[in-house]
Image 1 (tube, rainbow, N blue to C red):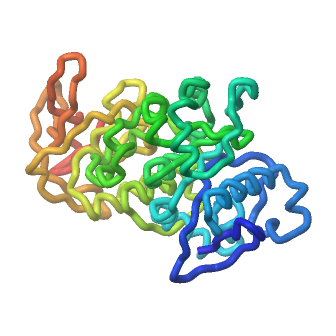
Image 2 (image 1 turned 135 degrees about the vertical axis):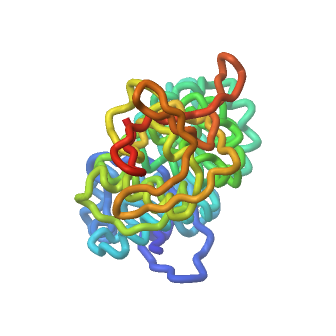
Length: 351
């Protein structure tokens, strides 16, 4: 793990005995300072340099010597280093003392906003008065809430501080929790207690990523690795197969049926097969619950071997999944079934 010294802006590799560090969560833009750039004189002329210095300045004020920033702390020339970073990123955000969130497209009126580059304890002391001075809903449309990689950063980090484009303090994850819930459709119970995330159904976790985007199609799967506790190699160039491969890895370690409960909204169904081709088809599936008795299943070269209760209807079959969906309008739980077509013998396909 490479860390950046907040005073010298020099990188250092740590294999063990990793010191306390803070971490940056942000969206990439033009002119980002990379691993190759950070030690070069040209770095100071690059557009992304001010983001690094702003982060380091705040870290120094908070008493930290080391920071991790993805743009310059990952050696992307090495495929092994890149794979290690992607598979470890959730843990790195989990272990960070503070996660600084830089909202590069959020600005505030200087007349109504106090420059708040001060110590952690002063921020806490001033917070209640600050709430009365600006409208926190300005963060709702931030690009940060639309990107795939920032999802795990939001959920893995224990303590987060939000800053606007000019590094003006906006608040913490705790103080902005209502705004974050509205912007992400992630329930407060998971935002408040990251330990509960591990118990969230797979479909719920995928639903959180359903409206998020990544620059490369593979990254919509890779950015979910830590969230679903899966490790797998990076194969850039595989496209949407990455999300399929992620689901195969999940099927090896869980018998949960919510992974099959995609496409419950008509507009979302654009693929065939028992597995989905994107988190998008899980949109609105945040209210699913698992049930007992799902049994075991096995992924084979012929497909998925699984035992489900089926009811024949209109020449097709409805297979009942061992999970429930909460109907907010009727305030009750109801079962979930998927439509199957009999192909031959014991083979069925989803329709």
